[in-house]
Length: 276
Image (cartoon, rainbow, N blue to C red):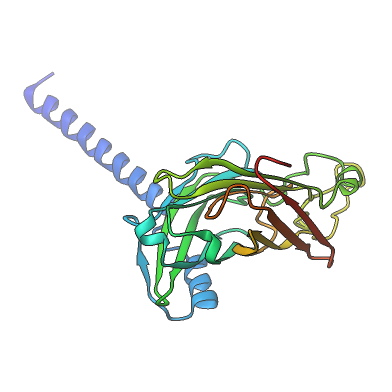
């Protein structure tokens, strides 16, 4: 092969590689948009024209890059004490879910002044940005987001028969003082509620029908009579909702939990230190 042919072959190879890399880059950008059309609509509908500041230095959002099970995707939000002490509300959003607002958490005095943590499990319907938006006492909004690769979570079949699940609906497991946040200034607790949290998009595997949506809409947690948080949620929270969170107060204080679902049913339970 002549020197000219070698150069031509090398040039062609480099051109092909550059094109392939460019196509790959374009595909990645298309798959993981910085600002989705859905988010633009959500921003307008729920936050109006208010500015939302990037908060990668203030909020940590932990999610899997690719979820093992789209119906139970774990997410954890952490905020350091110096920022968290001024946060009055936290909203979780999944851009491409049929109901994008996962939950809005309004904090009370018992949320404390230390590090703040919240962990739960969510449904992800298709590849999407997941967002945590904090509102501070002065009305400013701060956000972090992560791109999660998962699909079908909102229409995935329930893990148990609906009739069987309804027999335990509303039962709670409450564990208090199960750990400390990084700073050691706040305790951690966990609340788990038995509820099918039917999305309305899930086919019954026996009847082939679609049971109507039936899900937890509100959760209120208090300790020692003081509010930790009040949550308003929707179908994006996984079956049998579970919330692990930080709080302030005496670990021996009684923790009271109240919940309500979309059919108007009310549930309540309480527990002291390490009781369930």
